[in-house]
Every structure is written in C-alpha cells, then in structure tokens.
Figure 1 (spheres, rainbow, N blue to C red):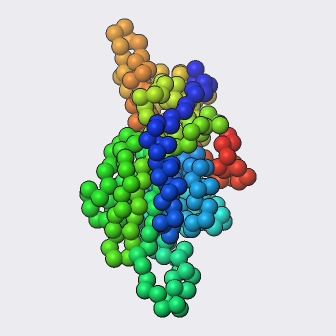
Figure 2 (figure 1 turned 180 degrees about the horizontal axis):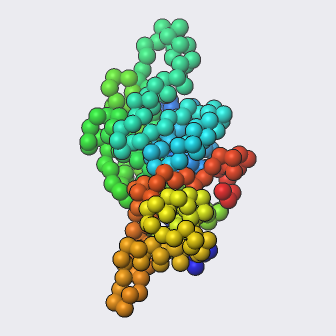
Length: 301
C-alpha cells in the first residue's frame, strides 16, 4: 500500500471565485508576495499564479523555513534568485524574517520610485498582494506585518481566508490579502500528495493512512537518522515498506488495540501531524537540482 499514489483533486467553488477576483485586481497592485512552503517549494508554488503575475515583480517568501533542511533552503534561495525573484526566508509563526519582506518589495520598485520622483510625483504606499496556496501562513504573515492579531483570520486548516481584504502596514504599504488558491487539476499526482503532506489539502478528503505510509517511507529513504531518532526504530527495518514502518512506529509508541494489534490508523495520523509540526526534524522533500528544468510543471522530484 505504501507505493500507492492516491488521486487527489480539490478545487472548491470559492477557489474559482478567488481566481476571478485575482484576475480583476492584479492591476491594483505593485508587487506580488507569494508564500511557498520551504519543504516543497516547487509543488507549493501555484503554476497558475506564475502566469497571472508574469508582469508584476515578485517576492518569494519561503515560509516554514525552520521546518526544512537548512542546506536545501539555501539552495532554493539561490535558485529563485537566479529566476529574478527577491527571496525572503521566514519562520512566519515566530515572526522571523518578516521585516525583510517590505524591504524586498521596495528593492523591486526602486527604479519605478526614482522615475516617479524625477517627475515630481508624491510617493504612494507600496501595494502588495499576498498570495499562496492554502495553509502556508498567509494570514499569520499579514498579522505579523500589521502588528495585529486580527488583521487577517488564521486557522490550521486550508480555506480560512474567505474574502479580499486591504490592510494598511504603517504609512508605506498596503496589503491585499486573498484566500488560498489551488489549481483545478494536478497533472502529476505526486504534487497533490506532497501538498497533502504539508496540510494544504483538507484531510477530510484524504486517505490518511496511505498518505502517511508514503511519507514515512520517503523520510526513511532521505532522512533516516531523523526517523530513527524520533521513533527509536531499528535501522535495519528502514528498507521495508511504509506499512511496516508505520506498524513499527505504532508499536514503539504503544498504539495497541486489544490483542496487541497495532492501531496503524492512529499512528498514521500521529506521524503526519508530527511531520507538519517539525517534530520529526528539518526535512525537505524537494531539491532544486532535481527540478532545474521543470520545477513548476509537475515533474517528479
């Protein structure tokens, strides 16, 4: 079962509405700030938004950088910079890197501002649109920038932000918050699965056991020490399937039903939750060297 690739598609009606709203309002903004999840920077970058924002300068905020492999983070930062983006590494939840975002936006608009000043035009607040797929920390970021706890609604499930919001950030910037938006169809199911790992797709429609079994197998292959240290499993079983690994982890954690049978469903939920919260370790599931030619078109990583 751990080799299964569950079909994942999720495009609720409010996302189609959000897409239309973004198309209508892109002309109102100077800079687009797109948040990606540092653990899966390619899969969490919406290819639809790449097309929509092609004529606007962009800041890439690599959110949850504290949960990803630092070496891989730096490789991704260099990769994005080569594409012409300003890049900010951020731990949004704890406010780290947040102050760099307005600075990055200002750098992108420096030439435009100089031209306006030469014409005697009064400088206007930078108008930034905050975008990203669900559950990458948009609302938390806006609250951090606004120094308010209620500037934007937050939640630990995708789809909390429901409507467009303009939010003033000091005297120099305005933020346009928009709901998280996925794209209508994942051409490569591995992308949908990676988004399921990080919580950007509602758990209510997922096969949690299969998702978790696939995830634990991948961690065993790429970050075996993290798995051993967290769950105290025997290194000799790392080559087994994700099903066997979940069973071993569940037994170690005492997730037993009557008769000594491991409650693997309970274990699957626990492993997925602990990965999402960084308890297993700093783990990156995508690397730029494997996505050099096609990071955003759905190729396997």
